Length: 506
Image 1 (cartoon, one colour):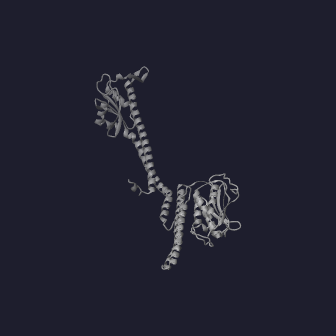
Image 2 (cartoon, rainbow, N blue to C red):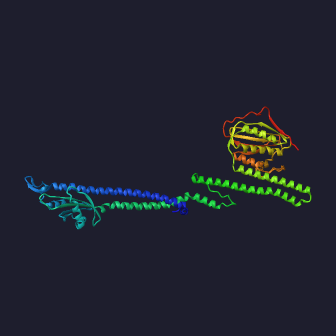
């Protein structure tokens, strides 16, 4: 059967078929071995009974009992040597008479190939009338030194027999004593037990098939529900989920599939939201450029130059938007180079870099000593984004502090400004793409905090915003610590607070 053909067979049928096939093979092996063992034992019993006739025949040959009158009274038994048998005929008559036949046995005496005596039962009569059987038995007895058990096909069926030559002194005739047992009749109970076992096995297989059909159906029902759920999922509706009752493997599989569907739904929703947001954000620069181009006086060089500057500025804004979208996509895709990051060194590095952001005095107030696992460049990028965000929304000249601290479980990287702060109602929304606080009107793509949040989540962390004592906002990235026992440096980390400042120009 081809692979394609096998795929059309339901798993329920394949599983049940495999179980029944193994069970049938087991029944066949057990039944076959049992039948052969019983058959061999029965055949061995037949052979033992035939061989015992040689000893019995020897006793007949060695002694005969005659009743004679003596001084001790009539009827005493006087034993006479076998040589005193008058002839072969007398010996065979004595053997047939004295060696009693049991069920399915025959006793025949043959002289010169002709049946002379036989026991008075059906098997003896049937075999005595079978000339081919008698001839074969006489031929088998041609060797006076050995008597072998032989199978023969006779009228009642298969018989096993032994033919023993019986020479008598003074008589040249060839005498043969034949003892036969109907093997077919003897083996009939064994055959009947095999038939009974076969019938019982077939009934058992049938019962196993019926019970197994319902059991496998129940076991595979989660897979059926999984298929139905998969069919119910459409590009516009990913809400279908599998039931997760139980603690077996299929329940674990259902939970895994549900988790996959959650991630898939989140990814698709995120893509849809991104497309909607990008479409919305691109409408403004496109509308601005188009409106200025339509109203531009081509004869007026100043108007042309002004429109050109506006177009370039809007194109630059769209370029930054595309770059931020690409950066956000990379962060959400976990495209990171994970290594060990020393928190204190990262803090000092950020302190060196933020000095290039004009308009504010920058101060590193604390740096922690400890190690976390992460992408150092991405963490640096997120931290600088928080610093840039603070610089945009903090009044000129207001100080901004950065720092880090660390305990056994969590590292915190923070930026603290002294601006207007973030309203509590907006603190979750500002981490969404293109979201801004209501009072903030400065430029930007609106993706900065979304990028920070994506980088934090990719490191199994979070980014939160709280109030700064005295006014302002403190943005903190919480990250898990990779090693226990982290110790922190005292504040400040340098000789005196590090103050970096670049005055606003222009």
